[in-house]
Length: 145
Image 1 (spheres, rainbow, N blue to C red):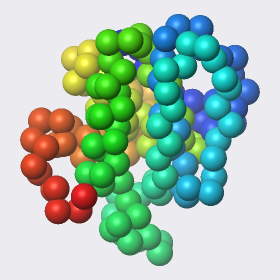
Image 2 (image 1 turned 30 degrees about the vertical axis):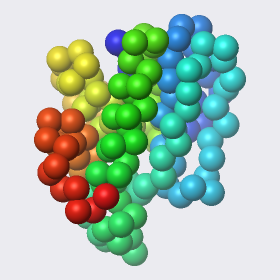
Image 3 (image 1 turned 120 degrees about the vertical axis):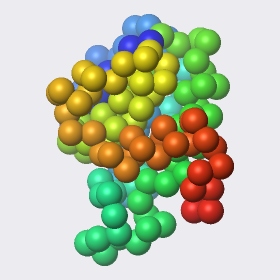
């Protein structure tokens, strides 16, 4: 399984991927929809909206942040397509924190190695931890659903 991480401007101008893949599109609000290039090889697009924050600061509430409901959506989406794809394409606004956080957790579980994401990016640790907790123990933190 391969993981490609982009910024929002890059995902909107990159040529479509030519292998079976899914896209995880991360924006801060639901009103900010990225234009994902169409591809006959795309098996689905998951759109998520949450700020790039680890805690409720700067006017964001705990409900706004990445939580178990987001993690469950990611796992359901990726594992649901796992047998038909060879690539996960991800983006967030800058391509430095949220999407690498998702990619690192997915890579750790599905490939067994997440080190490249920590060398090249600054993965959002709330995103990374929440995804791993939900995968390994789906009952952890289920109250914030």
